[in-house]
Length: 459
Image (cartoon, rainbow, N blue to C red; front, side):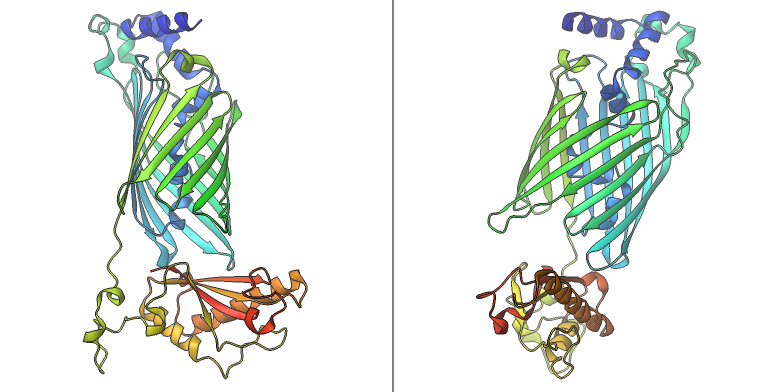
């Protein structure tokens, strides 16, 4: 069976007669669902590193500008097998809760070439301190043409070859993303203006007829308290009109953001392995290999995919670049953003206790006689709008667990409202009520465990 399929592919590339042209293109377009999806919506194994490729709303959740380049060689070793070149740029505007993006994609499907260009916009809505909702829209155009360099010389006289005119058509994607702590649920719709795929084939219009493709996604990041690894299971479900759904499951393991690996399974297709490293502060590189267990993939040398990512440097922060010695009694634009001495040694992820912040017994009302630390914190955040912190409220176990969780969340939100009233931006604050889950001493120690902590999230 494998040998017959391979011989068939060789014959397809070497001849362009009318019947073989018809049969071959139908074969490419109407294989079982794994192949159908691969041609109409390429299944990038590296989607976990660039989720913008299947849902434009992901742009608004980023905090840095990103450039991704992906090359995918599907079914390597077979002549005429699909190739995909994908270039994406994502521009994050966290202060404005927005993101902008651009996509340029080129797909070579043997004798057919598809080129698309899209511009994207995403907007983030903060439902509350723990929940976020993002919306994204991509609009652009798709150009279809014949790969003339792959047509055999003796077949250029076939008049049916010229019945397939080059085509421009509108293209677009839409996405929505819900985030709750480390949980993300999303829905992306690709090819908004598609007329719908059909199993009928028109020889006078050999270009692929696109269908709407929808992708439901779910992921959850697991960060153990001990260790440097982060584990994230990701679930995707793809579906389209007239075609059955397809499940894609991946497990991604990341070590300190410096190295990662993933194992994936795609039903009706096979398995995928990937691994990558961060070779510098700004550059990441990753490789993926797919093992198909059915259809044409069995006769190939597998599918190869390479990703190169470049993260643009953030602007320098005067607070960290200005020496203390230049500080004078008269503040200037150059030195006003220097951090207070108590925060200068604070590292990202390191908690710092605010000792003077007090609340009433079982109350979320601030003691207004002890707000100096909050005022100092507000001033620092106002002058350093790139800094983001977590406000964490804690208590002991003298209150029932659910009630303590609710109480501490209200206390954190009260502090957040106070800081906002002093000019601190909402995006700079993450407000978390931990209840009694993180005691410093014995859990019944009221003095030490009833506390407010700040944690630096981003400089």
